[in-house]
Length: 426
Image (tube, rainbow, N blue to C red):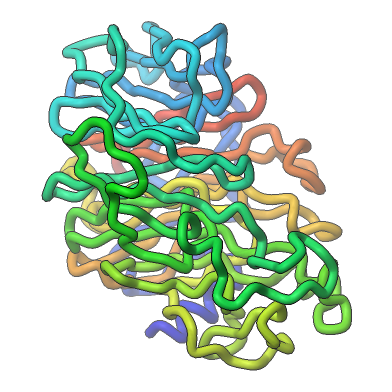
């Protein structure tokens, strides 16, 4: 089953197999809705929930219906915004800014607290019954290293009082000379001591630093897409693959291979796991992990370092968020799988950009993939060929499944936008 999924992943699957239990995605022939600028899977209906909110990233939704959005840059001096639809028309008519003087990516609710992560800290406020939190935030983890490259700190929670924080590697492939043609990789890679993995902390203990956490998993270049699967009680991630194979090793990779390698990897992550960065990558046409050229690989040589992904998505789609439903409000077939937002990347050049969509991975309650992934929402980038991320109308940077079954997408482009998607029936 795994080999089949790996092979199918690079085919840009839109159709589904019989194992998908009636879960159907968008098609190339399906028209984009002019009112929203996107198209969504049959049976679902989208609205533009909010526009012009700033560089929107990850989101959280409370039981009272308020949606909290992290902003990558401050908007009018604030790094987050709270949104509410008071009349139920799918459009937020209340908007409150919060998180003065800071900006970030991570946003989540755990217990009675709203958590927000900048590039250097995770903080929280008591979750209000309505509106934005007020007062000073309580700092849970501080002094994260910030090397600017892959500096965002997305996070998730388990059901045992822990918070899991991605600490991205400020590196492409742990080269001795960063992003230098032909430079070998460092052995062992010293970056992995502080970066390139997921660290676990006490979600309720203020004043922690990285030294107080446990390195839960390593070998992860940058897992912007991270969520705890409540059905399988396990951590899952989708990570950004390495860049520029042709630029640094033109004798081994041509431009087309560089645009199509390596795959973006979707993993189940147990404690102690080593995903494989920087020593290996995934080429869906080759069974097993391939040794990185910085470590002596030739584009075909296999490596025994790292684990096989559940799915290998096309290269340089850039997974940016991951959300598992925690509700029975969605139809059967949509309740236990993974929604993944891909915001695209510059690394497919000189070929046109790709990704810019939200996909759904059908999964059983035990956490195993049960069918081919589908495109749940598309059209974000616009109709013209995209040669650079700057050309895109929108880039999906967040996806959230709320407890009432509503699905939210965020985009940091064109002033920032949030969409709300609800199931409307067959």
